[in-house]
Image (cartoon, rainbow, N blue to C red; front, side, top):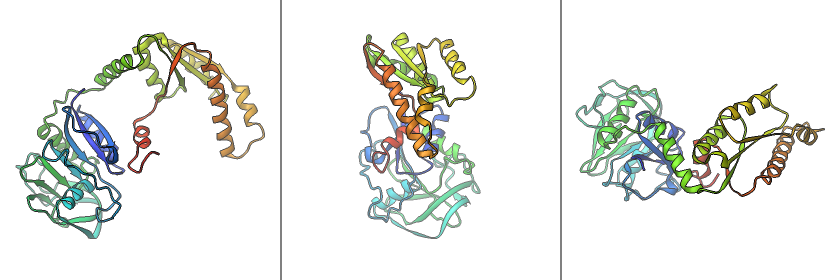
Length: 337
């Protein structure tokens, strides 16, 4: 396993941006909902606690036990994550006099601090919070502030644990990438040797081990990025044992069915085209309501795909291409989507 940064998601709209910034530093990271926090393993070099639309003062707000990480690996709390750390240790988090949303300037910074190296007074940061840390717990030390927020950043003495009230992952925080680099590279010690090529190699190896040497795999292809990337990864792992099925529902662009099918075959993929236009047209005949149309298309596709899949002997696996947000939403912070 490559070294990684673990991101615990508390439901922030910016969580995916945190992951993107870390990957831009050539460091692997994974997002997990706080309700399914993984055990600490040797490959986890640090933990980031995301923001959240919740308030730590609410009875039902996220409040996980973080003892598995604190003091064992570097931890960075962002916005809600920073407030949560302070709240759990006995600090005072209160509603801000004025809800801060937008640009702010750091008026004082401990520039010698490893987390803030390269940031100077006046650095622009992006705030998005309704609460503020009024009083820090014992052992917490403020290391940056703004004219309106005395505790814009802090550290827990004796630990490599930090909290920041602003969002370094958004572009409006002009030195945000520098701060993320300070944490991920300088504090956590990540080597910055992970690239998408490493992901491809590791995924292909995992697929070979999981699928075995004889099993056949069925994959529905659409011509889009999700299923096409999945197909190429599987093809590299198992070759002709991948059986792609590309269904023409009659609703594609002019000549798109032939062009996409030709492109897949040029890539060396084992793919079968199924022109089921007539079946879809029949299912849609007389329908005007968009929701009824959607259900008719979905039902017909399942029927066609199931019929074609039965033609593949020895198929034990059904593959599906997806995007990372779908993975997160399937086990979201509010439970399964």
